[in-house]
Length: 98
Image 1 (tube, rainbow, N blue to C red):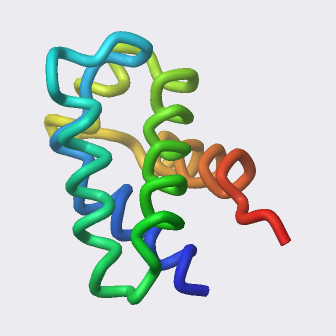
Image 2: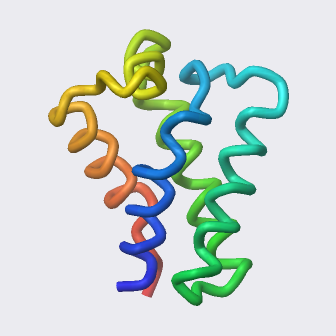
């Protein structure tokens, strides 16, 4: 459950720092991951798990979204379908191993 909270926090609070899919501007991918890891502190997820999850989230964004779609997220104009696609991709690709 904590990891689901982490995913929600990372997606909904970090969308403005997303960059072009596949090619992030200098420093933006690491800024996304660092901000995600810092946000995870409030959910009591250990730092190593948070880092792994946040790196996975960034990887999904790298592979799933076009530049135009990322710009829509950054502008706050992403459709609910896009948000659902992002959450679905992350929940499948970044599912914790048991």
